[in-house]
Length: 135
Image 1 (cartoon, rainbow, N blue to C red):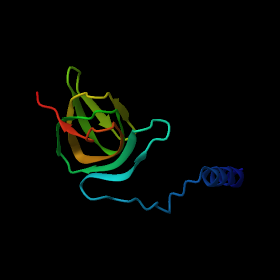
Image 2 (cartoon, one colour):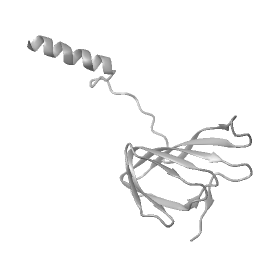
Image 3 (cartoon, rainbow, N blue to C red):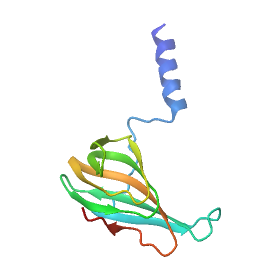
């Protein structure tokens, strides 16, 4: 009985592709916002998409800014507090995602372990990726 149970657990682990004894190498980018992909969007002529790998130190401040297009942020490690004009602060942890509306002023602070996130921005013709958003 024990052998059958052990075999079942072993096979289930193999089927899931998870190997607890074999870590997966993970790229760690320099501290900051690191663009990794940028290109035109065929379905939206004149528009482009930028994807960035974000790596912020613990407590790092994200200044108040806005984007002309939408931003989609997915937290892969650490945490952050996201502040948006007219809305309650949002605490984001690993596995959380958020959509930030176009031209929405936002800012934040990386959590105590820092922040690792992947962000995508829609670029509009003639507009920069990021603009300061004075109060």
